[in-house]
Image 1 (cartoon, helix red, strand yellow):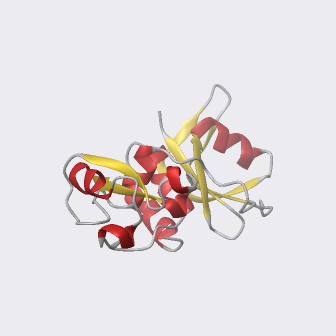
Image 2 (image 1 turned 120 degrees about the horizontal axis):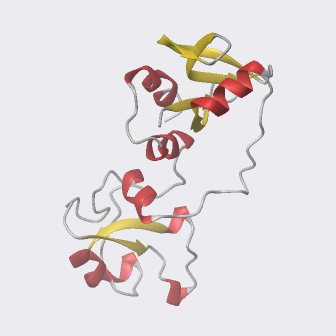
Amino acid sequence: MQHVLVLNASYEPLNVCSVRRAHVLVHKGRAELVEQLERPLRSASGAFPWPHVIRLLEYVRVPKAVQRKISRRALFARDEFRCQYCGSSGKLTLDHVVPRSRGGDSIWENVVTSCAPCNLRKGNRLLEEVRMHLRRQPRPPTPALFVTLAAPTVPETWRPYLTAFA
């Protein structure tokens, strides 16, 4: 199945959709073609441009309060598949910076990728108690990360739109 990158009116990446959905949005005047493939999209009655990147004509407000749920796949991708304590890439798990037993929430700012040895060493203690440090502060991932996770492969023509908001 072919995927189409959907941009907000501000060119911020929102999501990916099917070619059919993208064509309908363009045909109904809700979106415009930004990039198209060389080959046409054929139907019984004619040929149309094959959408590859579309931009919505009206801005869609994405509330900050509605954050995407944490998944291991998204967390590991956000942290570049590296332990946020030692930098290794073996036997990755997720770790709560402030342990749940100490009142820590399962939010993007409190969950990091950790290798099994570092996670075991930290246990249910705070970083100061075990003299461990984060390589970088955890933060919610960018919308571009979810776009790259939703598409099996990210075409080269999408990269300028994804890196601008990374």
